[in-house]
Image 1: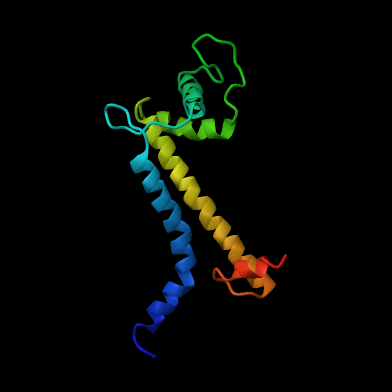
Image 2 (image 1 turned 120 degrees about the vertical axis):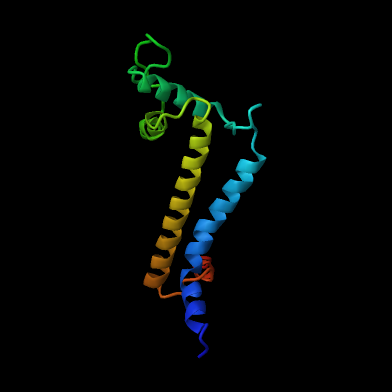
Length: 145
């Protein structure tokens, strides 16, 4: 066995993790690079839903929780309370409105990587339980169902 054999074995053991984290990072980089930008060069978000959430987050950061405009009665227009609270961290860190789309893209990328790695790990565990290979050939086993 050569000296590099342990390194190759370790790489094979964790290639699923490299793939599961690398693929979403690559796709996110492509998206970020190809996405629309403001005149200042900052990323713009493709849907208005994100901007609706950001408005609710902005209002919450200024003491008007669940209000779209100052003085409005509270509404349920922010359809994801957890997402809104996650974004509130940006304003808590002192980010301005102009930097929040970048935070949304970053949060989306991190959550994309997390969910892909988690799904890949669950697939590996399921493959072990089914007694099939843990690599991508496990998908071939599932095709018979």
